[in-house]
Length: 270
Image (tube, rainbow, N blue to C red; front, top):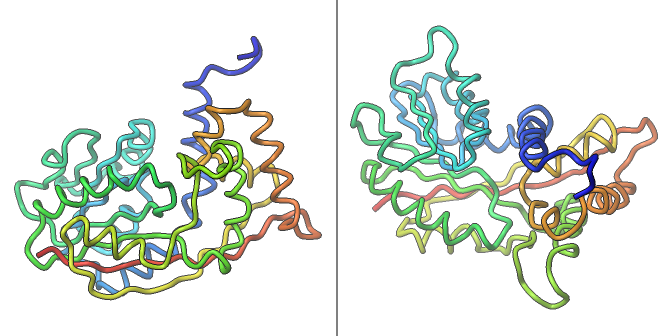
């Protein structure tokens, strides 16, 4: 590390803020499409796995749902608490980084579970399977479980940019910790592994739009998909490679625009 580089914790905290202020809103169409399909509202007791800084929970709470969230990143949870703990916050809201049992509101079973953070990094699949299995045990029988993922790679302009993370991380020909595109049945396979019953799916446009290339770099680095690359290479190198990959998506007015299609699966607990 160079002597003028910020400490690792400062970089992580900055990326947390970038996620909340730049990147997280890109997934709002995914959240809203799933909520509309399920009729989220009063009477919904929702558990968000990997809830991050809480935007999806906030949207559900605005519809009248009781919400709880779990995330391993305490800095993101701090932001979620800022969003969900103003005066008038429902007393049953839980935001925890510990075991799932700590998120149960007053002992009542959940009837909706969400795992919106898109499947796109193979190293997360095992942990997500275990979390889904545990969450299903805290939900009523037949409860909806929503899984989010990338759509077809040919319909996701951001896929080409995310390949930078893979190139900087994985040796040629190896399937390592970097980003890899989702395959057609990834969500169904994940649901089956977690003991869930697939019950419908949908697609929704989630374009990634940024005011300028610098904002795009900050937003994409905040996703966590570039963390292995940042561990394997200097941050300046990662940022340079990312900026070059974004160049074809920069418009004449300086903004960056990448159309994407995301997919969600509705599964049911048995």
